[in-house]
Image (cartoon, rainbow, N blue to C red; front, side, top):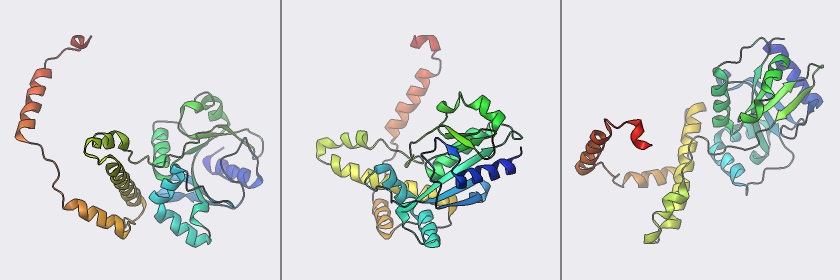
Length: 254
């Protein structure tokens, strides 16, 4: 079948609760948007859950903070709580489609945008991909070939809340512990990381950055600090290192 037919069957499967082994996507109170975000995804499933997410879970908490602008818009439209919304980007591949080098990029785009990825495959593609599904950072859903029945074959259940940018904050903070600034450095790095994530994410989908006044004030404070520059001595060390390694053979490391 073609992509349009497979997409229709999958939507019917969700509404009819004919998705086997499904404990990821809610099948009630869902809104399905086709070709969402400039056709980046074949489907964007927006689920309004009855129970809010646990904001004490760091991944969920950070997910709301980074994607506040998008969640706020949808919450106003659906008149629901912002912590009851979950987005599921879905890529559909029918047997008429070719599985090529575009697929990894589509999976990565979904993770960067919404923290997760769902891949739906037609019957023939499913036979090939079932064995490889566990190695992909996506939830793999395969068509069974019977009416509108699908099956969740593998589940990638890690919500990537900081996929755009992820700093090793603890290592950097420990480097400053000698001056009793370790804990302060950690909190500042967390704030800076979250601001960068929000800026990058909002630039993908919105004209404005969606930053709060306190975040803007924080960045303005940073502008008053002179950044470390590369000194002439460091440049000399770098030039010397380049000369030393210019003719280094691979066997020298063995």
